[in-house]
Amino acid sequence: MATILDGKKLSEKIKQEIAEEVKKLTDASLQPPGLAVIIVGNNPASKVYVSSKKKACAATGIFSLEVALDENITQDKLIEEIEKLNKNDKINGILLQLPLPKHFDEHSALEAISPEKDVDGFHPINVGKLYIGLDSFVPCTPKGIIEIIKRYNISVSGKNAVVIGRSNIVGKPIAALLLKENATVTIAHSKTQNLPELVKSADIVVSAIGKPNFVKGDWIKEGAVVIDVGINSVDDPSSPKGYKLVGDVDFEEAEKKASYITPVPGGVGPMTIAMLLSNTLKARLRIGS
Ligand code: GUN
Image (cartoon, rainbow, N blue to C red):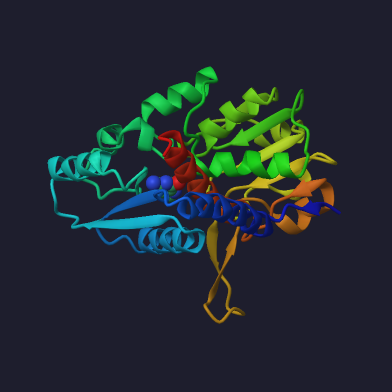
C-alpha cells in the first residue's frame, strides 16, 4: 500500500511558516506582502478560487486586494488596471484569474503584468527563466508538486518521469522542474500513442488532464510515485451535494501499486494556494525594506 502524500497537512505547515515570515516584517513595522487578484466576469469556479485565495492571504497576514471587473470591459481597460497595480507600492504580487471571458487576449494581458510581480509565473520572461534554470517565479501548482516531493524526501534524479498533459499552467512547467531535478522526462498528451505502456515505464507519474479516473491502476509500475493534479467533479447520489471530487487516477487501484500517491481532494490542490502565498512573500522580500 502506498504512503499518502498529505498535501493538506503539508500546506498548513507551509502556511504557518509563511505567517511567521510575514509577522517578522510587520513586527519590524515593515509593510506586509500584498497580493492583487483580478477577476473578470462571473465565472462561478473562478469566484470560488478567488475567495479561497483571499481567505488564505488573511490567515497568513498577507494584504489582499480583489479587483473585480465587469466582463464587458475592453482589453485596453484591463491592461490599464494591470498597469495601475504594477505601480501600486502596496502590491507585490498580481494574479489574473484565468480563464478570461472569450473576447480577451489572455497572452497580452499576462504580458502586461510586471515580471517582478508575476506570482503565477505565467509571464514569458518567467517561463523563459524557468527553462534556462534562472531564479524566477514558478507557477504555483508545479511548484507545489516539487515541494511535496522534496518534503517527503522522494528522490527524482535519474528517474523516469511521465507527465500526462501539456498545459502551460501544469504540464510544461512541471516537466521543466522535473528535468531540473535530473529526471528523464516524457510529456504525454492527447496524440500520444500507447499511453498505458509509457506510463508503465514511469517511476514518477504526474497526471494533469482533467479526466476522471483516466489513469488505470494496472498502468502503474510497482513502486511508482503518483501525483494526481486532476480535480474532477462526478455524480455521487450518496453525497448530500450530489457530486464528489475525484482525480485523473483511479486511486483505489493505483494505491495498491504505488509507493507514494496524492489523494484528491487533499493532495496537490491545497499546495497550489500555499505556493501562491510563498511566491507573494518572495516578491515582497525581493524589494527589501
Ligand atoms: N485558473 C486555474 N488555475 C489557475 C492558476 O493557477 N492561476 C490563475 N491565474 N488562474 C487559474
